[in-house]
Length: 247
Ligand SMILES: NC(=O)c1ccc[n+]([C@@H]2O[C@H](COP(=O)([O-])OP(=O)(O)OC[C@H]3O[C@@H](n4cnc5c(N)ncnc54)[C@H](OP(=O)(O)O)[C@@H]3O)[C@@H](O)[C@H]2O)c1
Image (tube, rainbow, N blue to C red; front, side, top):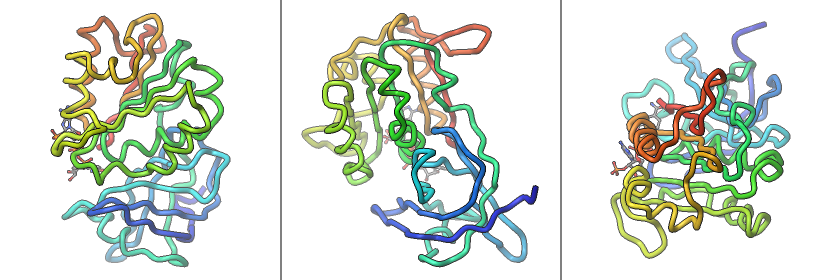
């Protein structure tokens, strides 16, 4: 199989500042919600590729990728200049274990993300599995500034569609507003604000957590959860926490 498949840009959405979503039509192998593929462009005659999670659910098209433009990055300053009709290259085989099949049965599913790591959780929430498998689903999106709370329309539709089952908790660290939790996710776990806001207790028997984003957030969140008696899930040693570092 060839290393790259050529796709076509369908749309580019500029959310704010350095945050963008790219929509692409491409023939790829089937993926599971929460997985990623690589996006690539030719740079100085060589293909440069980086992993990006699917935001779309597996049955939805076009494919969508949510990304932040990083200075001195070989790809993202070029990605954000792409326009509808432009070619882009993708790895044909998706990968990754941030998928619901890796999460053992439980009652409440908590999805904890920083920044662009919201993407894979939107893909998961676009499938039937979380709503069928869990009594309640909590999505926590932590960002620096209020304007970085992207995809509010999509989240609003999920809230309307799954009223009583779905809770959304925004967390904003560097600004105050009257609807988000202030600070960081691990603090909000430790001082009880996250559970109070969600109206759900974190407990080993009921809670299953998927944590994705800034590696420092993933580490600190796992520690906060461990202090509450939860542990990382491994196939041979079941626990409550599944993680993916986003960079
Ligand atoms: N290489 C990549 O693929 C890639 C992808 C995405 C992002 N990044 C890197 O991340 C930078 C910004 O990304 P971003 O806008 O998503 O911001 P971020 O630094 O990931 O911040 C998002 C949220 O995570 C919080 N956070 C940071 N460290 C934490 C910790 N140890 N525990 C708990 N929460 C923590 C931040 O709080 P505070 O405001 O308190 O710090 C903020 O609310 C980029 O410039 C880039 O360096 C890299």
